[in-house]
Length: 113
Length: 114
Image: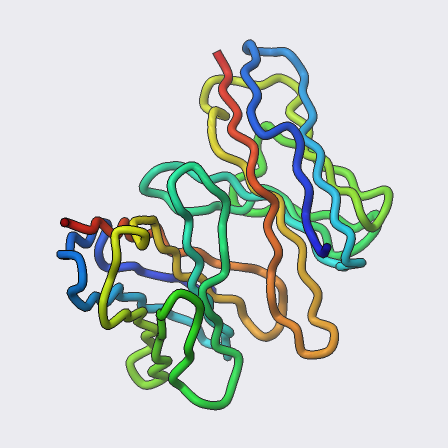
């Protein structure tokens, strides 16, 4: 079985500072990895995904994530955050053998002016 | 436009009154799924469907029913809603064809059971 751990439930950061949101997973099979963002009172939007190839994945809104197979991690980063990045961020994985999508509990990014 | 459409967006109902949340996708995806989102718990899968007339339980199926009579539609049925089913619900669809491993989500249905 697979599981996803988002290590921080909340991450406060000052505007224009860098941020890293951590995601670790466990799986005995190959997985594909995703980061989704949920802005206040809105639905889920795909930020980026890792399927194969380069382990550094670039997404929308200046976010990027790095897949580290040995550490089973897929941390999300942004070099300079803005007030508009205030949202909840979810890491999710799916095994390559089926459609099941396993979610982390989410990390709320709080931007301090 | 490729999309998953959920209705209604908001619903307040009373305990025990049957309700249906509709979900429809226009991408010919074979896979569809329902999730509920609760604070601190992330998204948990309720039911999923691999194709027409093929459905299976997810992690939290109790109190819910689904059907998949057509490929595009996957309604979620609460026969006798209870307050612990107050939650934010999302429908999603996906296809693995042509190397696409993405999931498309509906806008969500916020359900309150009083």
